[in-house]
Length: 372
Ligand code: SAH
Image (tube, rainbow, N blue to C red; front, side):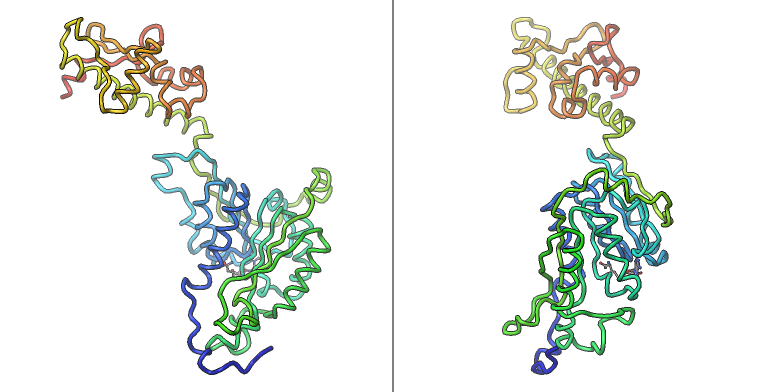
């Protein structure tokens, strides 16, 4: 290892953003590139990477694993859904689970992931654990992509106050050659390709030292067949689940129904208000009864078009105003939420006041006025 760096380098290295954030950003960029649905973070510690990843909209399943339950529990509440998640459920489903256990053991809950991240984990493993690690991660879990980051020991002389290792719990720190030879051998054994990169650039002129954090991105060469997954599947669970959050999602019928009811009532109210204000403007004069004349307002324009092209005119009868469901269904948000007209009818049945034949949303004008 190159030890005798010029003095001026030893005090000035300070990464901005901090190195741990650069590592997490690296993973986030990878997620945005490959769009995995299921991601597991091994050695997840205080769950900060998981917290960042929960905002990636492609992810539907997030799992964390750590041998230390206490460190996971410290901030695991940050992974729970917020009130806004219930007020505006997302279109995707998201489940986050935390497991207590070791990467040296296989557990069926770790099967089926697309991406597995091991950020600053391997240098914490005892020799016996490190030996089992490749078989667990690459052989058993066998995700499409594995990311492994670890300190590059060649960089240590540039860091102030690093004596032997960067952290007292590190069991080793590898040079670039050591990490790459381990990674290449692991990739060869389990039929992955691996590319090396890193975060934390060395100072200009010292590029040979390499990144402060070295990273290997492993990509599985062949898709796994269902058979090989099954044959290796152990039946016994060895990890303990310490946290599970299921986020409200529009994929869940009860949240979808709520969202549709709200959107139907909102849309119908707007249509009703337009209708009433046009009536006030033109009175009952049949000659001037073009309630939905084109205007600068997009909503009115859209509604006007519907009325003209599809004859979906809202109307007033007695003290009630009727807004046809077909009109409401043709509004993009309602349409996207329900998919089919039948589904719309099913979701709002009994929940929204409808005309006797069920074809229109019905509001009482008198009732509205009383409230005013
Ligand atoms: N990944 C975190 C930091 C990891 S520190 C980040 O990106 O910030 C290493 C973590 O690995 C610690 O939380 C430690 O408890 C955990 N760890 C150590 N040995 C482990 C093992 N055998 N199995 C699972 N986790 C382990």
